[in-house]
Length: 260
Ligand SMILES: Nc1ncnc2c1ncn2[C@@H]1O[C@H](COP(=O)(O)OP(=O)(O)OP(=O)(O)O)[C@@H](O)[C@H]1O
Image 1 (tube, protein in one colour):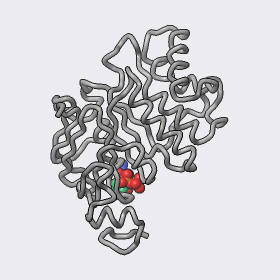
Image 2 (cartoon, helix red, strand yellow; image 1 turned 90 degrees about the vertical axis):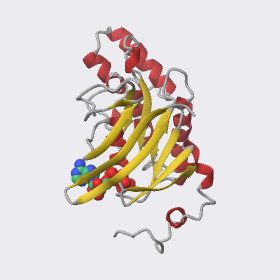
Image 3 (tube, protein in one colour; image 1 turned 60 degrees about the horizontal axis):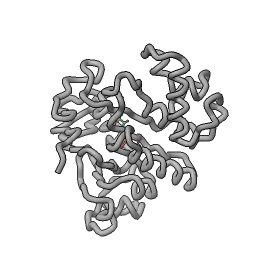
Image 4 (tube, protein in one colour; image 1 turned 30 degrees about the vertical axis):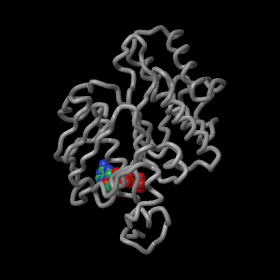
């Protein structure tokens, strides 16, 4: 087994009286595609935000490639790049696709505009948006906006190779897409995983059955702030775990408390 890339040990997080994560242990190994699943409101996005260094846990420890992170990412850079793709593509409406994707390089690098444009175009080609650099987000479909946000997540400054993202965190990348548009995104996630020089490790939060099956290798099932089950994606259909059985069947009868 390779060394863990990311380890969460005993992570807890509450928002007011709402204890969202309760002593979570989670390990992500290099090259792994980890699916984080579970009912709505069980803290899946919160885990991604903790891994990304955007939300500080109340207690517990986070190790990134064996190095303990003190607090939020802004307190000290992680030894590897971790990039998050948000549920909403979160593009700036007033900027073109090219300006959105290259935003960080335009703001924070000394690269020439021409060099940045070339890098952006390379990333847009990778996500199948080669002809859309000059468009504005309002001119794109939901799937295209997601792809633009992928391009933004994988971009990095070639003169600072240690900033290149090694881990991608996807928060519901296929939410709101029709089944065919979802397939395109699922294929892209796998394709990016296997593209040299991009990310080989990712964690993905999703509710969609096809996305779970097509983009995850290992799964953790979260409920009531705890990891209740973990296994390979192929174990999902055979496990007798009642939470998984109910989750997959969509039945309102079972141990998962139905809200609303
Ligand atoms: N910044 C915040 N302030 C207050 N409460 C929050 C905050 N972020 C998340 N929560 C609460 O924490 C709980 C878990 O939220 P989270 O988004 O992590 O769940 P989730 O499993 O990803 O849900 P979903 O599947 O519906 O997206 C919810 O009750 C949510 O309202």
